[in-house]
Image 1 (spheres, rainbow, N blue to C red):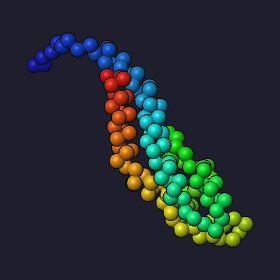
Image 2 (cartoon, rainbow, N blue to C red):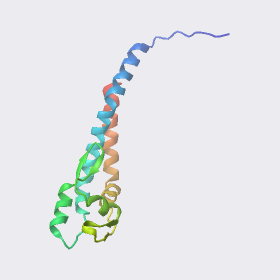
Image 3 (cartoon, rainbow, N blue to C red):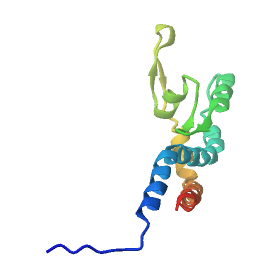
Image 4 (cartoon, rainbow, N blue to C red):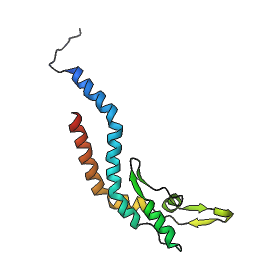
Length: 129
């Protein structure tokens, strides 16, 4: 035998709030990630490796920024420097040692990043609920 329970919960209002959260959540979470990445950027810039070409180091450091994806760079040499590897401009292979500039910066800044994300997600939940 099935029993139907009646409650005083306004399910329509809850569904409306959940719908609003679902629509706004991706952009709001992206903004929270950008704020967290912004804390990592200065440390990542300090971790850019020193090379024989100081002007290239400056270009790479200047290109490191924060966006909704995290810590990013528009320079083509950023990925090989972060992860290591071999590139071959003009057909001549050049081995680049892994520097993990953003990875190290993220590890160093982890407590601050966690606080930022906690604060942002808490504020997001308070706005919607």
